[in-house]
Image 1 (cartoon, rainbow, N blue to C red):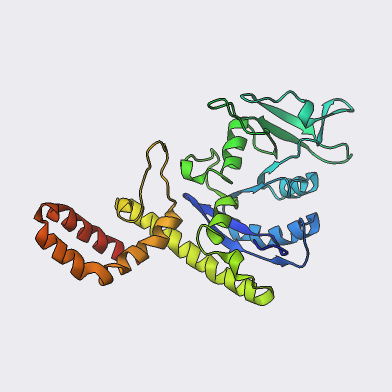
Image 2: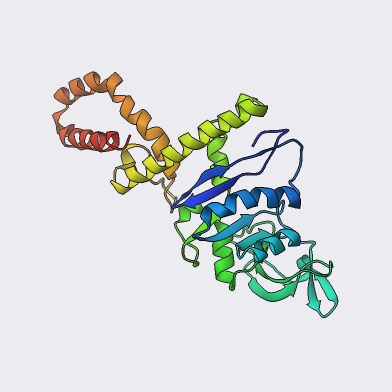
Length: 299
């Protein structure tokens, strides 16, 4: 979140955005270790005891120890492996993931395999996928995902929620709370609140994160309500030429919806005068007023 500070967040995914539910500031640089991860997860997982849970983690958080810990708690997980990790190709014969033959456009699923050469751990599944070339361009590397989900489709769909929330696909496991981060981090930083530019530390940093978490959740919910009313286009451009998906998230719509409404007090007199001059736009003006009232009802 901030250069020089280590953090370990947990979030709840709701529709197309994550709601932050727990943060802790780590007094060190670099990655968290298994003890810190277990301590923090033990505080979060009980909050969702009535749900199926899926923990998503990038390569910083991927370890067989963490996978074993989650397996024992009956928690689903998708943790991205580094390509130099080993899996047991045949009995007592291990091979690096990068040597399994994964290339652009190829995907496969390995069930019940031992991961790493360390003895005494459970067997897990490994989902392998490298996105195909589009217009001659493919990602630099594929995904190797350590998981206890039972199919390639479920594992890839779950892990993609870290990145492609706006695509509106859903994972196949019902009633699942998913921990993910990428889009929410962008909202907290340059995409919304410019948290990194504050340069605050310690308790002031935690207090600011708490306030932003509340504001972020509120804006996301309000943005979803605006979308359901069908008036998103009055706040932000829905699509651009050449784009197949919607441009702005619920968070963006909620964040700027209030600004859009508040601006009317500044320009309403001028707009009304312009409408008297240009009567052929009156229909659109009336539509805008109706949209404004609907947006105001959200806040």
